[in-house]
Length: 226
Image (cartoon, rainbow, N blue to C red; front, top):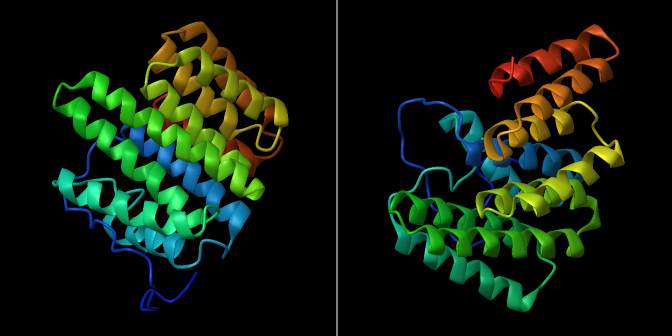
C-alpha cells in the first residue's frame, strides 16, 4: 500500500463524517465486494486513489470516501472534477471508479429524500461508469460487474442484475463470495428465500478446506445469511 502521506493530483475527495457504527447497508456491501476485487486485480494501478480509499477503511470503518456525506453540492463538484479528468483520459480507472461511487451516493441521497425516480437515474449513471470501467480496464472486469449488478438492483433492474450475478458465478473466479453476494441479492431484492438458501449451500459446498469454510462463515455473518 502506498504511503498515506504521498501527494496526489487527483481532485479532492469528499471526506466521510464520523458516525456511530451501524448495520452494513446494501451500498456498503456492494462497495466492499467491488473494492476487494479492485485490490486483487489491480494492485497498484489505481495508485493514490485506492490507497486513499483503503486508508479511510482502516481509520473510519467505511468502505469508500463517499460512504457518508452531508453535502450534495460536494458530490456534484467532485463528479464535475472527475469528469473533467475523463475528458483528458477516458480510460482513467481512478476517475471512473470514483464516478461510480459518487453517482451511487447521489442515488442514495435522493432516495433518502423520497426522490425515487431521480435516485434510479443516478444509480443507472453509476452503472454507466462501471460499464466504462470494465471496457477501459479488462483487469477490473469482475469488480466492475459487481458494481454494475449492485447498482442495477438499486435502480430496480432486477432481471439485468440477476443475469450479471449469474455470469459472475459461471466465470468461477470466486465460487465462494460470488454465491454469497448473489444469495444476498436474491433474499433482499428478489425476495427469493429458497434461491438464496440454495446459493448459500452452494458456497458452503465449494469451500474445500478449513480456511475457506471459515471465510464462508464470516461472510454469512456479515451478510446476515446464516
